[in-house]
Length: 618
Image (cartoon, rainbow, N blue to C red):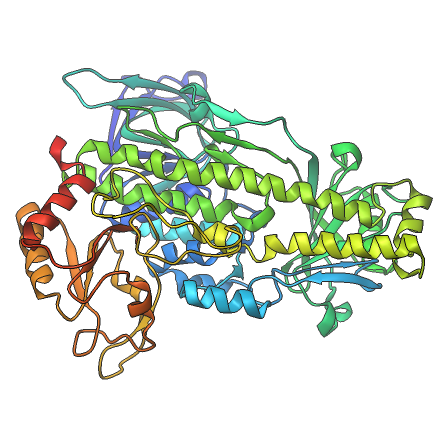
């Protein structure tokens, strides 16, 4: 990577003259923030042959686990840069690890269980039909170093303890937009400047980039406060096979210690590292003013587990607030300035879509920046990032907040919303053969059935449909079909343009090893999937690609072709005939499809790519 570093100074730097040096670093790309979105963006840009600089005001990667539920669609992105195997090596892959149970204590009476994706047979079957990847528990603590290592090996310098102070936008009719960023080095205690062509705000929920450039947000009032307590304790001896899961909600309405606090224990590394997640009464921070040395926290954990002699080591407290906010736009018109990740969308951890969405924001944006930077696409392609990803963020913010509000009904049924004695009486009603007991059992059944949606929410994660000029819809005879059933749960597998490329297992005719259709696409290239009668499409792709320097890989699937459709899944999902084709973007979303063969395949394919890549502005 080439970073151009200019020092403008005639004086030595001393303690009394430590700000005499005025330095300017020149780079094409500056990413502010080294969390999941910033690290992922640097990785995907590096995959596409670009280089730049990542800065973070933090002195290190995430210490606390933070985000942990890692869904298949984030894994699909990392599969494209050959990191999926490393994710699986570091992750917890037990089928039960994302499931939840509700019990009197960790070792006490259990009231119910919610089986998540990999543990639930119906959800597992649906997932396997939808994606080659799986749901795992993979914490942000492990994710960030993995991505930053890849980025640093592929063209990006990463600089911690470097805080952005101010940004000056430079633009004129004669020059391309640029930004002069004033940053502060917390190690040398000096300021210096970075000049960049592209500026990316991946700087979290309190994004300085978003504030300085006056990005507008659709925001609801802040929700309840909570606090995560990271601790070590060996709980393995308590976890019989039936108790094993990732999250244990503890129902103790009569608890004298921290009354009114609703808490659950989440496994971080089975079974000796955990997080206690606690919500205070009336939306308060339950542990306001406390530290890792506060012995009351140890007592509470012992009470939640059900063992007063348990050895507990408190490591760190991390308070947070439920947010409901999404930027109206993720970019500024005619500027090379973008928001992604938590800087653009802020929501609670329900559905486990935080870091997963950050990674997919970056995957969508990276190839577009690369194509524009290389002159393969017009600058208008960059506007499609916000057009495609902002509606996804808005949906996730709304649905995750709706889901966390459903917890209130569960807490009510379990007596956690009532005074101590009354709350315990309500819980006891569950075992009473009385009209009140019957009503409460029915309420509990209904609340748990309603809550199942979160643990079966493949549709919410998968059904992210893009509508922009980077998707070609002119040849579609009808609008996108409506999802049958609950769109949060059910998936729509289709090659309708703007959809994810459908997954199907395929193989070489002599069975050298199965791969997914996903493995044919990505890697910074367009992909054209054709059938037995696809020879003219292959010729067209070679001609259009060579004439415009656009990378297009062509693969034929069917009897006697490069790949065979082993289980006939691709035939069912492709949506075109043997003479048609499916054009897939570098981010593995369908750009366009042709149901059959037009009179001139080369002319048609060229027309589609000119539109999708905004090449009329080149």
